[in-house]
Image (tube, rainbow over all chains, first blue to last red; front, top):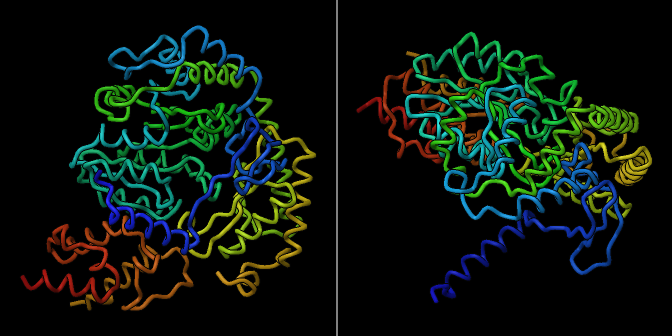
Length: 415
Length: 82
């Protein structure tokens, strides 16, 4: 045995340090299906509590939709449980190809390749398509999985200030000596809920001969008039060279992701992307579920329309009550509390009131920017949102933060 | 010749500070103080190399060496004199 007392102590001390810093993450066990109403065991061993879920990425409420579950059952019956192979040996079924074609059509791109997750898509794509002669220019608030992908790529890397188009342009000008320039952004930023200025970015990329990469995980299925994503919302469908997205959020919420875009780039991923080459792809049961989700979304915009209405109600309700929120239009609605401990206490009190919403603080968000991130779903009915709003107001009154400015809250609680 | 300290300070303010009200000095910890993400420092390294026509090897471009304006200036001067 090589797991010595010394090794054990190293890890025990590290974990103690994480706990002492207040950064120890604990799971809350859900005993029901994922939906607006869930039953939660928290802390572990406690009796189950019925709460309203205000923090899932279940934007369209499809995680447990009967038609999706039924389609998954059929997929399980007709295509089995697993593939026991990576794609290029004997791990590709007809439905994997069908899903790739359907995603290409849905996103308005040239081709698509599935990945086990969007994390894997982001981790694999840059290394597959770039060399040391190229440069990646990324928004400073892109998702952690993109940062991992950038780290794995041999190309040079630089950043621009969040959503600052002048800064981006100056960076593009600096790197005209590079073979390929790729501008990298999230479509909707996961912590703030704001949308990338894809129309301006597409123009700049055109002007400076750069490719445009968008991770649309927090928008595919519901942003844009027909839910195609941020590119539809910004009027630049067909102009995004690389889109990555996930099936783990709005599109049924199970797992899996993809790279969709220019056909040569997709083919390069098929030849060279390591998470594609060395890992099984999405299980048939999940593929069948996502196909059903795409059917549903292509037939009707009812769910994304309901999400839009719910989001409007929620944002207006919070603002009217006197909360400070990150304004915008996406269903990610951060309620700003600034202080880390206040965000944790607020979350605990909400849970007591039957509302499940989690506090985020440094290093997940910048120092002094602690918040409760709420996420709205088409699974929410008006009574859910009214109850949640009343609970937020009750807890907000307890901490005397309603109608207060940022500075006043920081004066009371620090940042 | 422009004062290197002021050139670096101006670059750091223009390039990294999001909030105009933030103030930094020659000693303010940039990376360890959470003002600058170590990941973003590559642009500063490139700026210095172009501006002063020097090459800073990657193993010298450490987060410690880039942690405040004074240490950055010391690094530049080291390679300027080579």
